[in-house]
Image (cartoon, rainbow, N blue to C red; front, side, top):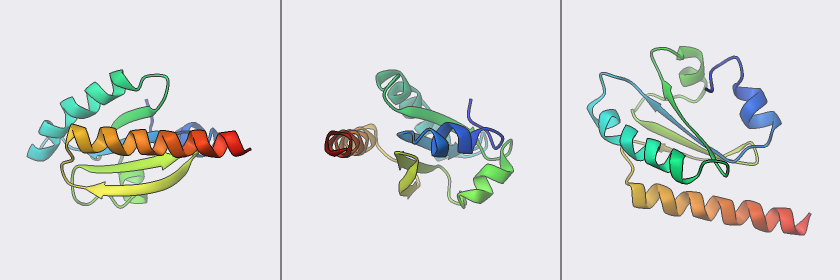
Length: 112
């Protein structure tokens, strides 16, 4: 589980491809987003680090990424922020974005 204590190590230092979604139990759109994120986590297990972060439990981390509108999804490629998306995102949109990021990471790795 990603939290404020291990975020830099797990995402930045490891140059991870990741999708972090900030949610809250009291947020209605978040309750709709969570099953999508959980399904994507299963689909991309071992390829993309996908985590759900509760803003009430991880206030430092949510402040760091300015997660004001919930849900907020932050996408990383090789430990760098690619995009921050505010609000509910469809499974199709997130899947296509993850596929694009993975293709770019693979292309960069092939050049290295």
